[in-house]
Image (cartoon, rainbow, N blue to C red; front, side, top):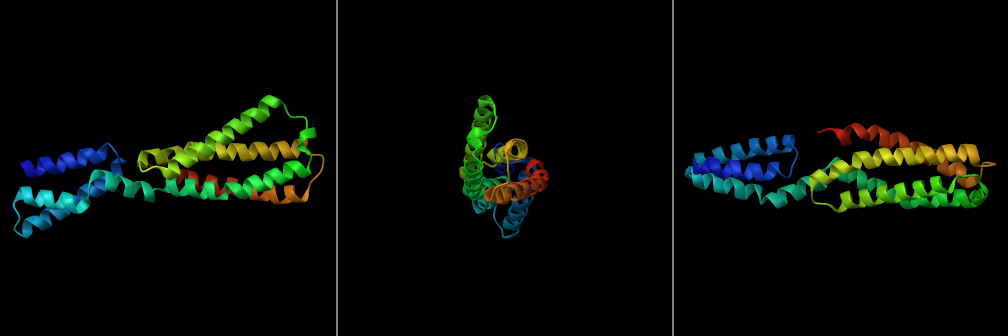
Amino acid sequence: MADRDLIQGYLADLARRLPAEAVEELADGLEETFQHQLRRGNSPTEAAQVAIAEFGQPAQVTAAFAHQSSGRRTSIALLATAPMFAGLWGTTLITAHAWNWQIAPGAAVAFGATLLTVAATLGIVARSNNPKTARLTGPASIALILLDLGMLATVATAAPAVTWAMALAVPASLLRVVLTGRNLPRLFAR
């Protein structure tokens, strides 16, 4: 029974690091590899050790899953487009003379703080080797959608006229809202 204890211990370690469905898939593959090793003539303990060695250390397996997660990929994509959005909206605010708009200073501070929090969260997810960290992308994506919608509402109500930069920034933000929203079910799937 030492063989089953080895495998169960390995899977328990992975269960602390990975979502349950990922561990189930790994358990199936590990069992198949274990059975293959038994058919090759290894003792049960040797078969368990070889199967575990073939799968790799839990930290390696966890890192591989983290790098393939939809949360991490989404975080990277949103971060990669951030400079473009900063340029579009920065230019929009400058060309529309946003400093003359009637916006409560507290609202502007809250917007900026939320934007920085979202960017920091996406950065943490993009650099993390922990698949559970990728779950933060869902709430960060919702916050980003709300920030985009807030910016669109502010421009619609406070801007005195449409500028060329605004004509680019508005559809870009609308597209990001739609694409990010379409991705939310994947980000919240367990």
